[in-house]
Amino acid sequence: VAPQSGAPSHLSEFQEQVFFFTQGDGDAVELWKTSGTPQDTVRVADLSPDGVQPAMGRPQLSPLVHDSSLFFILGDQLFKSDGTQVVGLGANENLKNIGPNAAWLSLDDKILLWNPDSQRLIAIQDNGESQVLYAPLGLDDFREARSNELVSFEGHVYFAISQGNQADLWRTDGTRVGTVKVADFTGETTLGGVIGDSLVLHNQDTVWRTDGNSLTPLFSGSDTELISREIEGHIFFRG
Image (cartoon, rainbow, N blue to C red):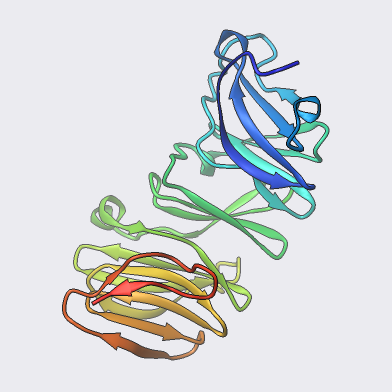
C-alpha cells in the first residue's frame, strides 16, 4: 500500500526509521513509516478510519520521541506509538490551538510543550495528563508574550519570553516550583543553542553565554545579529 495523495509532512526519526504524516483517501490523516525503500514504506495507522479528515484537524508538529515511544498531537488529542500501532491518550484542554510555531521536547520523564497561541508552557506525562508551568499573568501580557524556542541544557529547559521591549530568560526542570526566571533583558532575546558547557543567546547588540548560574558577554557590536542556531559545535552571528 502506498500513500494515496498528498506530500509527506512532519518527518521524525524513530527506531532507525522515518515516520511521517500524509493525506489518504477522502482527505484523511495517516501515519506512515519507511526504512528508505519502497517495500519498507508502510502505513502504521489510519487516523481517520471513516475515510474523512477528522475534526481534530491536521498535524502541526512533527512527532516527538520520548521514553521509547513516538508521541504526536492532532487537534487537542495526544497519541503515542510503539512503531507498530497507535494509542490515543484522549483530549486535553491544554493542547487546544496548537499551531505550527509551537515547540516541544523531551525532558526526563516529561514532555515540555510551548504553545504560543495559548501562551502556555505545558508539562505532559506519559499518560497524557498535563500541567501548566508558565502562563503570563495579565491580559496584556497574554496578548504580547512570545517565546522563540525551547533549549535543553544541563537538566533544564530554557526559554526566552519577550513582552514589548522587555525580555526574560526562564528555565524549568519540568515542575512548577522549578520554573524560574534567570535574567531580565531589554529588547528581544534569542536562544542560539548549546556549545560545550555553555548556553549561548543573543540580545540586541550582545552575544551572551551562561553556565546556568551567571551570564558573561562574548561579543558586543552595533547591529549584531544571530545568523544560525548551533551547527557542528558553532553558532554564527554577524556584527
